[in-house]
Image 1 (cartoon, rainbow, N blue to C red):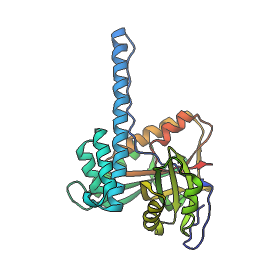
Image 2 (cartoon, one colour):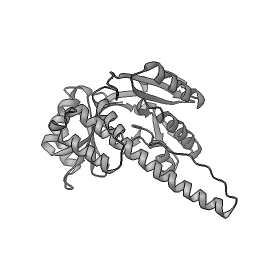
Image 3 (cartoon, helix red, strand yellow):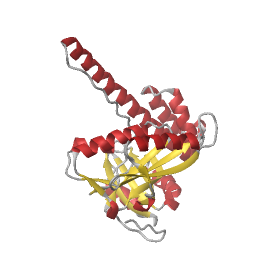
Image 4 (tube, helix red, strand yellow):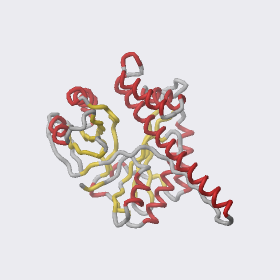
Length: 299
């Protein structure tokens, strides 16, 4: 279990992996005649393309919201936000998605209404616990949508927060390919609030820290190391002693379908689960974790 302290440095063996929101289309096709097979292939290609588009939208939306929150929504004073918007436009992310992400970073809906932040705790029998973070301008609508999805998939509302630790998480992306984990860790651990720093692949590094220090460390470490901020937010990390291992592909598929439906709810910002990889393949595990913002992983 993490025990963060403002005056104590501590390295943890538990780390997390960021996963961008990604909706997974489900397509069934009949294999009757050659013409049907040809159409089947066309539909699968379209499904894969649509999935990639949704993934891009989710990735850019999260980045733009983060940059808007950290440095403000004034484009004349936020060059990183300008670059992110430009990249999103080139990737054909709709302007409505970009504008909504900028507003979300300011805690507002696209229409300017103040967003309400909620946590929705639930249990997937027998012992998988999850937390969904919600940002909405309509609490009743958001809860109704979530209740329908949870009930339909055999889960139930239950207190689960005690299975997680609330921590700050910073995801950094190196501008220089020579940036090493040792350099990032050395700088990160110079702050008493830092708990751990790890490399998560693709030139990205993750720093876990006490929530009270996230703003200061994000501002200072990006300036010192000259890195891009991909994420700077508070997250829920599953406690090691409460982790439930997923040991069958069938369970992984069932959870993935459930989470895919959950992420279809427009007010869901993030989903956290106390799951860990058991005796299942990489593809089966990835199918599940692509829908999660944090989960347990041994390093």
